[in-house]
Length: 100
Image 1: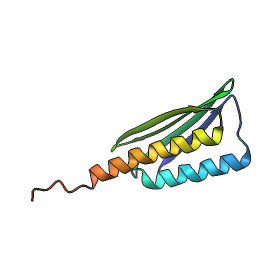
Image 2: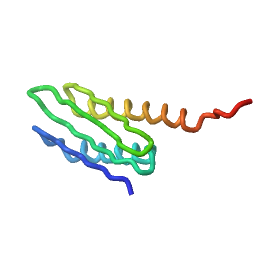
Image 3: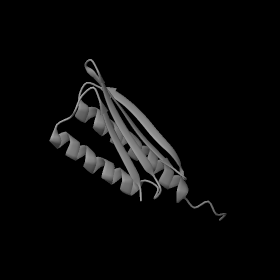
Image 4: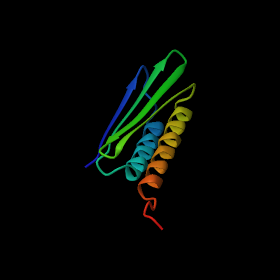
């Protein structure tokens, strides 16, 4: 069973934003290796929000870090970056490396 941890430091997003983030994390966990442990953290420093999304699994580690002014923008950029990494991992994992 995959593990997911979510942390907020220096602020608390609204209920709607938290629900959207939960949906995005769930979607990513469906794409991630089966034994993935996901950690997502957000920290607010003055007017900047920094987000970190990391996945650790036996297939490897995936990590991205994004900063921005709006929580929703940071969240969406984190999701896009991690999805890009997972897409590349799947492409390499399932590519046909057998000789022709």
